[in-house]
Image (cartoon, rainbow, N blue to C red; front, side, top):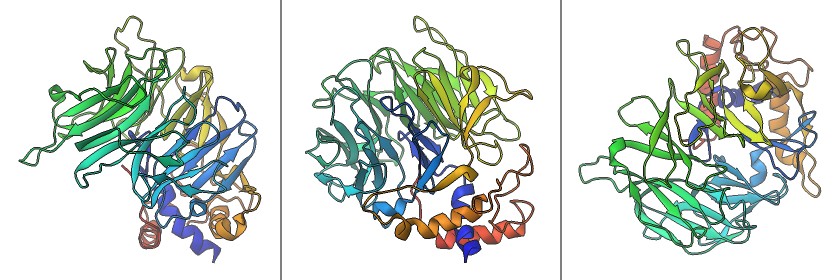
Length: 438
């Protein structure tokens, strides 16, 4: 029974591109690093929530089923007061005890699918969320909350078109960026990508700043500048199949400039307080490097990106200037690590990271007072123990850093591309809940 349960999890754990971070990047993991609790790390995976309260020395696990939703949670967002949001189709779900107990956001978003949300870093309790507009299909809107996403009021902005991301500036109170695309043209082509800006915390919005010069594609918001409210970063995905680009504005969205042509799909972006930029990309045989960095711009100048390490980057995060990198648990031999020397060294036989977690180190189910975690998550945890080799105390990393060996307990045989894996993938595809990911 244990092996069968592990098999049903394996495809979700091995499949690339299954989640979104900040509505912008297709990745599998998200890391949250609260500044007011320097020893706490929350890692979101495609099999649940991992928590550490001792800087990564020990880890505990909670399954998504505790949220009580019939469909899987995709995007997560973390805010002050331990508030964690998830974008279930059953409604925007929230927890304030790191996943032990959940509720569904009420008010104007009650029962509605919200695909992105942002916490105001400078105004406690203030949240903005993106969801379908009041006029129904083909519209999207921005909804406000003043009680940490417990309830939402009427839309403060609505349009026919597609809003793709939203984020508050940390550099100036009240500045909020959003991105999207105008309504599709009558011939079926995508409308012009645009940047949207508010200076009063989202109560009112200027007219969309269209950018037809980009061509046809989707514009995502990658992040707002940490020190300059007029600076923001964007991920541009051309419909033509051309290279993805990291764009920047230094004039509040009026002009957009490309600062990085990604060799493969981008998976993550982060800016450090020093101004150093990091981008994660998917790796391939032709392009093994997945982590890139650029020095501070300085007077808005060019920022050449340099290859840093051949890491299969699945998320990036920073706290107090320290760079955290999510890697591939098996191929990179760590799921979460701290980049040494700020990640500025090239991995050439040395170690580029201090590992904080491989999945075999997960210690067990988290404690939730008053909640039967074992009853809800026990079956999933038993499967994970076998899949990761936790129950045997043996990591699923025995074949070495260059190996593509599958995790223990998955029944895959010697290679992940063999007949055993194909059968496993078929079983998992039938049995697993459908996961919504960009």
